[in-house]
Length: 161
Image (cartoon, rainbow, N blue to C red):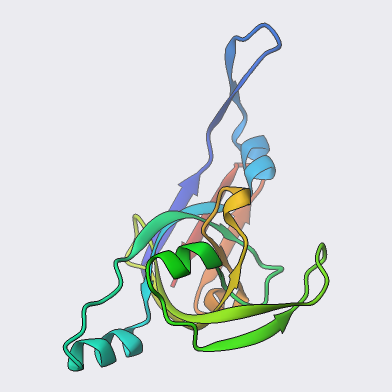
């Protein structure tokens, strides 16, 4: 069972400009359970492109927020378009902060860096995520394949598949 364990250490500045360590529990609370990921085209679509003799889109790496409140995994729409992922559908989505909008759907494969955890997400929803410093939200459609332990006191998470 592949396991990823992340301990969140952080630093901040005092009003005088001195750099100080922030306790891991506070760092995790402030930033959330963020992991580095590599996102590329899903295996099914990759196989089809290769059979046709076409090149695969270049995967991209960045930060993803593990979000148990998101039913679906999301990828930043600009990132998806930049690396040439095909939009396979359009869906209506709503969130706690936005009214219903139409968003593209992309077939992706997401690998969590530092672990062999790699999951195909056939319907990742495009969203504007880069303004939050992330390129993806890892939703419950991904997490259904995993065991997630969130230790707020220790400021760590453990993810296994």
